[in-house]
Image (cartoon, rainbow over the protein chains, first blue to last red):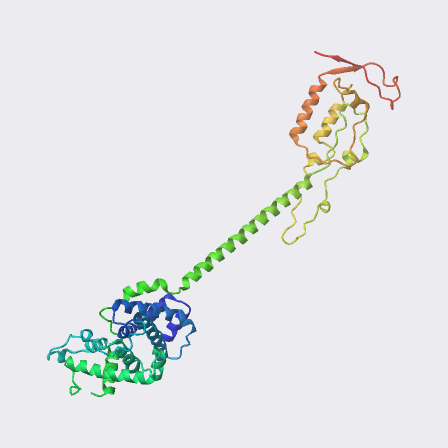
Length: 185
Length: 228
């Protein structure tokens, strides 16, 4: 099905463009949101990402649905990283100190453990500093290697590994703080 | 909790939420903003259609103009076929002047088709039938001009008083080649009317035709007007 949609999108068929958008809109929005915390900025990044997708889809050679999704995610991730670079001006990545006020406080009580759901866990990522969050999302959620992350962010592989390690520690602390324990799993 | 377990937890959570709408995201409103920016097939089609229609209109206009020009040209050729030798009216008042042999009605004939200039493009220009030349004008007998001549020739004294003397002395200058003229019935009627009015002034000639000078030597006739 996606193959035919892609083929029609390559012919700039508006109906196919709408179907492709419907298929990936929520997924790509959540992807953007993991990198860009501000909702308005997230939409701006997603808009630019979709425009690049529809303009570049003529050169895309379809092989499988997964490959299409990876291709689209890469475009949106690159757009998000460009946005972060522009906004933070290269100072954003290496701020290692987690900001206490940026951490989510939705589920602070002991009873919150039972109510912790997927959205809350997703929101925990937003409590990380930008540098931690970016490296963690690229490595753990998108599947990039440290070498690729180093190339994308213009850092060394060791820096990427260090950032990832610190991100994991911070997330575990946030999970514990929000009532999520290792024993529960 | 180990690092990999943390990664698995957030990855599985992310996959679970992947297709669920986010609370801050309205896909329909976002699409309304995105849609005008997308490259559209219809825009290119409109442009193509505009050019296509313009080209088609130009071709149709050019064809129509060409056809109308061709039709007009064909009509003018057809009119030429109707042109005939007009009998140069021998001076109705001087029937004794000889009519050139080539201008005698017996020698008149309508223009044949083969005499007409041929068009260069026979495919697009189907041969138009040459309309028949009206019989009264073409036929030697029965033409209005000839009838007029006949009437005039029966007059006893075909001399007009007011006529210029030089024109009487000298024969009417005949054109070297045959003349072609379209004669309308009304013109002939008008001419006949004029001649009838001229005949109202009757003149007498004194003297016998044979007693005068030689026929080659034309003298001014003595004309006496009788007016009512």
